[in-house]
Length: 210
Figure: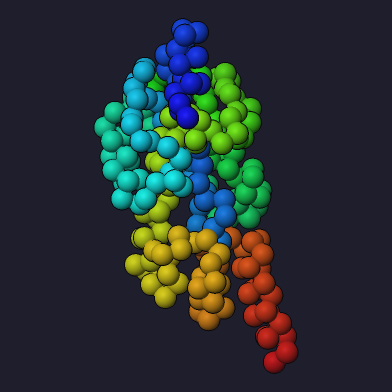
């Protein structure tokens, strides 16, 4: 699949500053949802760059450095767990994307967005599976993923018993067993997410039965 098709069509239409936007972290039980916005130089092709989920961690880190080296502009948007609980993950993802766009210190003429539709002043195109179909969105997915994973590694140093370095906050069997054993850290967990809510409800029930 040629993941430059959308970009090429825009270049042919005289649009040179194209941003790709993607987010990561909808599924985890903990921490923020993170979005990135990346503007690559016109006709810049980064061989092998694709959806961050299709790449090994080693490859993602290599592409992360390469994208930072080549990009005209990069913006990051971070919406924390408390805001996710307040507005829901879908709305929080949109907020993260808008923040990432706002934080991109570069001219933007058109925005390619993975799946979501955003209410923006700049013209945009929403692309289903955009991280596979657009190199600009793939670049954003790598930046967002590596950025968020680093947050999980940092948390792992503080709370090694939860295993954040391995599962990155996703609801694996080991992660759920850890929160059942060690409890929910209310400052960083998404309290409205079912597995977390269940642990909290069970804890409250035990207290009520004392």
